[in-house]
Length: 337
Figure 1 (cartoon, rainbow, N blue to C red):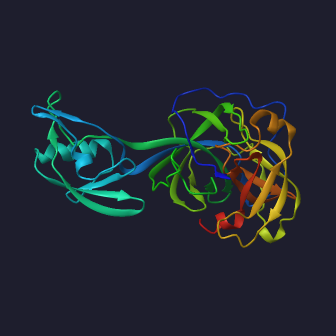
Figure 2 (figure 1 turned 60 degrees about the vertical axis):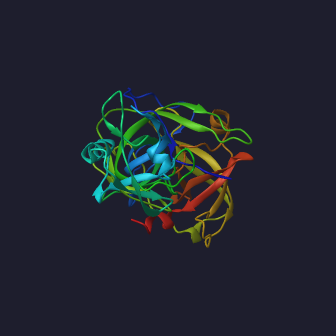
Figure 3 (figure 1 turned 90 degrees about the horizontal axis):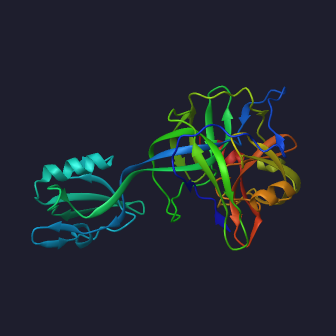
């Protein structure tokens, strides 16, 4: 199986696309429930909590080529979080710190695999730009798409994804300053046996609809600030103990901005799973299989309903069978709010 990582996507401006007319659209429900049902795809702009090193390169000085970062033991995947004890939160912060060094030795604090380390390094003056550099290619933000699972009606608190946030190399990320944007799905790379598919989406505008403050093993959590809930279905949540083997549905967005209902079957219920794999599910909806092959990246967080109640969210796909995957119990997500 494969965890449905937060799909790293390009950020762009776009207009809304129409939903898939061939599936059952989600509409406002007369029945009152504690939660608004998710299923909408959202774009996440994630602050990396520092300057993440994505590659190492040469610095061209008057006396030749240097690789200060590599010589100091820095490697791709590290995140620079401080220099000489001063917090680094962006690319600008790093450049300013290197400029202040004047070419003298600095102490770089790194975050690597959840641990911190300090390494001394001497910046080198680049011959062409005249700036001090250490030979790293970095980024301070990531963008991606995933699915919102639920929004608590009174507080507007939401839960999404159902699993840790990870990058394209499946490395778990520690994030900060996360903005959430409305997203339109414009295409699907269909899943096939041996390769997970993925949704392709565009951010609709530059105004955030929510802020996320927490990421953990069960997903991404925060508060909606600017969103029209008039079309959202109202539901109540049910514990894993109420789930049964048999028919259920998921709500996902695979075209445009409107969530659709798709049929699945729950093949297994495991209330005590330590890996948050509380359900084994199988997509039975022929339309969804035709469009996506089954479960694809970007669908992580898609809410699972049975008997009209929210019981969980899609989290993983089986690589050898994209119609099958895992889900987490909604009570596990609600515990983290």
